Image 1 (cartoon, rainbow, N blue to C red):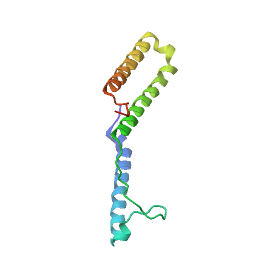
Image 2 (image 1 turned 180 degrees about the horizontal axis):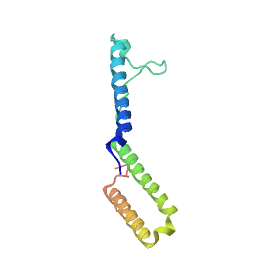
Image 3 (image 1 turned 180 degrees about the vertical axis):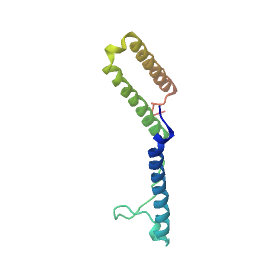
Image 4 (image 1 turned 90 degrees about the vertical axis):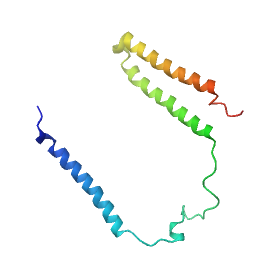
Length: 121
């Protein structure tokens, strides 16, 4: 059985962490520079002068493809525990993985039907 005294070290650690964050934010605000100028606030990248605008338009399809890649890549990560415990999971585990793959296949078919992976239209 636990008592409230068992949580005292956790509360002390949380208080110290929060106190440190507040202290650092306060000290950097007090000791930090206060002068502002156009030159000081300008971007500086490895001594190379800036040229042009860094905000150029990027196709939404690029981001959609990247998100879909991450989604289906993460799916593979979930297969590892199943592969390690294949024998102990038996039929119930096999059915769960089949259902898992079926959901992702349905999602993939939906993405294909919507034309999300077609670059030229």
